[in-house]
Image: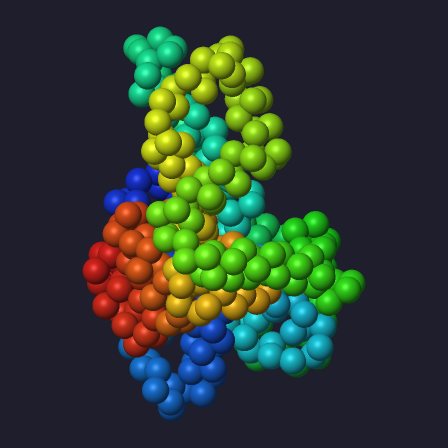
Length: 344
């Protein structure tokens, strides 16, 4: 398996255009890798791999990894295990990675502001203020940015190990900024998961409906100091007084509509609402990791292949229909997904 590094780092503005972006969760990457190196002797069919490769060489699809995948691969490499998974994932992804919702959020807030302002024509209606084209900047070159994707088949194991250790060093420093977890066994994410779980349990105990729950999420969104700062800075840049902007929110649903236009944040909220309704509020660090990336992938990617639980939660929340994103959980359905998207 020899696939060169990607030379296209941007998604087209429209989801109708190529290449299509396909997101695999960690379990999908792992299962595909095991199937490939076992010669497809298990339940996963070789036609799945053939379809993925065809879509890459046709330049019809890309398969970016999340930074969580990079981090987990790096930790695996430090332990001296599962080099085959790293080689497989880095080759198929061609070193491309996806930003999580934390990085996308501020640009989505600005876009929601601009959409609101344009709809009321507060500025020159003949020169509407354009939104950021987030799809263009959602994909990063990741590991390919460092050295590209090597052809390592047949190399001695010790050379492959040394190569990947060097390859992942720049990722380590980036990981320490995104996930301050290396010391303390991931205390920050564990604490965050605990807060989400506690909020979900309280809502379930109080019998709060999903409609009421999302309004509380909207309130939390506007109360967050970092979000308010983004709003105030954009209004200042546009020369629009805060009071004028707030006057555009004439009824409670106006706030909900604005919130829904902050796509990754609202998608995460709807995912967690469905999750809590179906699990009784149990939330783990891995759940937070999953939702951080799913919430930025679902609005902007064309296809998602993920484990059954989160696929069901996304569909129950109606996110697949809202964003016209195809979501599946069965690996052997990947060729059908790629055919539906016109990639093969």
